[in-house]
Image 1 (cartoon, rainbow, N blue to C red):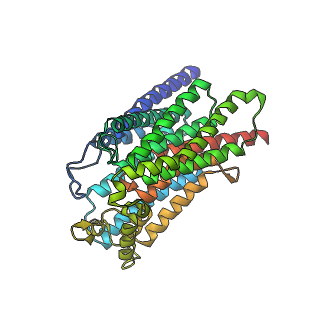
Image 2: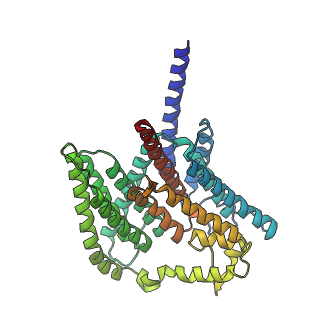
Image 3: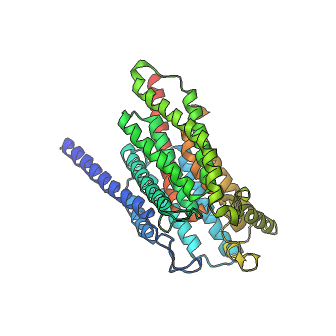
Length: 418
């Protein structure tokens, strides 16, 4: 009788995992299929999300995530989730009680959905390697399809004077999304055993992804790609554990090392030629971060008029920086928190960033594989509006779950040695 109950429970868990797997694949595909918004007005409640397909998928995942039984997080992850909730709740309270603004707008709805999605995703995939790999593999495949589309556009352009994107994606966001795909590939190569065919397959995807990032003309993503390449080379040089039994693995890692050197040596030549051909240089200039420095400066100058509680989201969205131009979200998560809710929210966001860096540590030293994984997320936090960028919250859930999975394995292994 007892064995029968155990068998039934085990079968239920397998069926639930299959349901989770299909749900996660549906979410990933929906996020990569954006629909152009009808309006850019954050007060317009008819625009629930810039990507309306993923809005319904997000609601579905939030409901599905509640089916998972109670889980026990590692301490750092538990603190991260609590801080995200605290930071959002504090911003809402400040907006309501101090600034007396209406919080029923697209900014807070999308922000709330993204944080809830983060928690639901972690609940679904936490300590489940199979589901984590399904997420990663599906994500990599989606970025490859996006890259092929961008390269196809480039080949068929009569003029090379425009930045390229995928469907109605913003160029900056799709470039960072593709960059995250490269980080996942490198993480898989450095942590799993592949045969030569698999390695060649992933190398081809990485090459196409890197090329697509260049064609988007997104400087933050190109910078991220450059740093990832350097970290990969350093990581490979640090490894001195190769043996005859791991010759195949050694071949693949050596090939990855050489491909990164080739990429780095050719990147400057490609960039020098490519950026001269796209209109982004003429409009904003590569040396001024696409106008972000001016936005950050304007936002910070305004913040210091009311640093304790900030000035609220409505003030941010209506702040005029020049005739006919509003400030809007400042393309920086930390400045955004500072402006909307003041010093306490700013410090909370810094603590969140610090905890994410701490999660990159392994055996009291920083693991370069983990840093490669988190780097696109950090770049996005400093150069994009991640509170509204659903894909970053998805990648953050994978990062937290994947790192905790590996840390738990190491803890169990060290306990066995004792």
